[in-house]
Image (tube, rainbow, N blue to C red; front, side, top):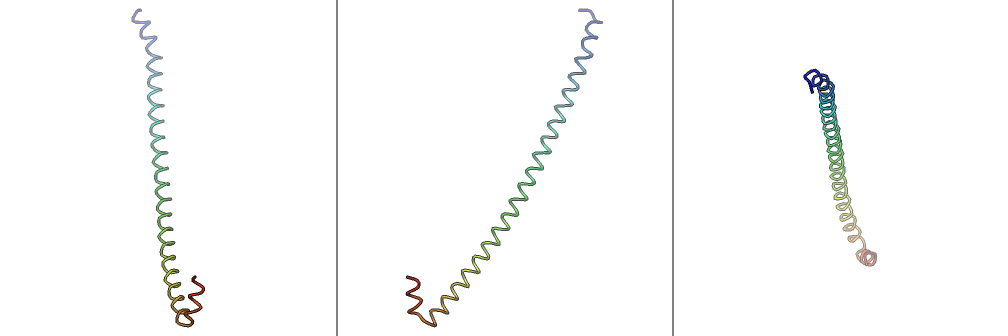
Length: 87
């Protein structure tokens, strides 16, 4: 293979290799960007769900406290009837 043949062959090969490197780099960059955005979206969703769960727990605690007070009131009014209902 002569030098002229080598250079005529290596030019398109070098172009193809450079193109492959650019495409691969862009693919990796875009993939990382997509995964980062997905991770941020999942974190935001998890934060919202955690906040909702905290609110639900607080409401449940308040409801349980109110129920205890109501049972105490009913017991004070008619203890026999409350016992028959709870059985």
